[in-house]
Length: 287
Figure 1 (cartoon, rainbow, N blue to C red):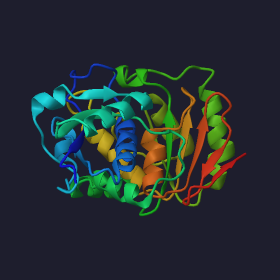
Figure 2 (cartoon, rainbow, N blue to C red):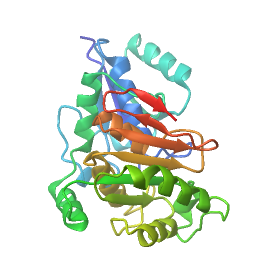
Figure 3 (spheres, rainbow, N blue to C red):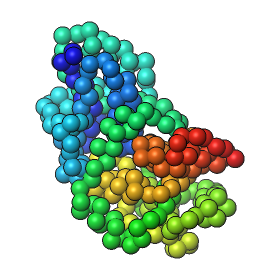
C-alpha cells in the first residue's frame, strides 16, 4: 500500500476556476477515478462537505470524508482533459505527497457499461436520506415509473423563466409522441432544465412530475435538494429516456445514473436525434 489518497471534491459555490460541473459530471469523474486507481494502492475518497449535499446523502465512511476546507477550495480541476489528469496522477504516485485534492468530470460520456466494483463504489454516492426517498414516493404515488429527462441548455439554470426556441419545441414533441409514449410500460415522469417546458409537457401529455425547478449542481444556496431529488428519482426508475436538444453528448446525470444502476435507457441527442438504446447489460442498439 502506498498510503496515498485522492479526494474527488465538489467545491462550494464561487470557488471554481472553471465552469463548475453538474452532479452527473461529478459522478462520471468518480467512476473514472475508481477504475483508474483500482490496484494502484491509492485510496479514493469523495468530499461534498462544502455543499448542500452533505446533509442529503447518508455518507458511507468507506468512501466519504470531510477534508480541509482550504484544500477543497484550492483543489485542482481536470475537466475533459484525460491526458492532464493521467499525468497528474502519475506525478502524485511518485511524489512524497499523501493527499491529492481534485475535481474531475473526466470519463467517456458514451460508455455503456462499467466494472462491477466501480458500480458498487458509485452507488454509495446515491444513498440519499430517507426524507428524500419518502418525498418522491408520496409525490409520484406509483411504485413503478419511467423517467424522461429533456436537456435544453445550461442557460435555463440562470434564467428560470426561459423558454425553448420555437423550432426546437415541436421536435421534442415529435420524439415524445413517436418514440417515447408508444413504448411506455409504466407511468412517465418528466424532468427538464427548462421549467416552462416541463410544465407544458406535464400538461400536454398528462405526465407525472416532482414540483420543484430542476437544478444541475450545487451552484447556489438551496440548489442541492432539487438535484438530489431528481437523481434519486432516476436511480429508482425502471427505464430512463433522455433528449438532449442542446448538445451532442449523452447526459452524465441521466445516462451515468442508468449505467451505475443497470437501468435500460434511450438517448436522443442533437443534431440527428437517432434513437440510441442501452440495455441493462450495456448493449447499444441504434435505430
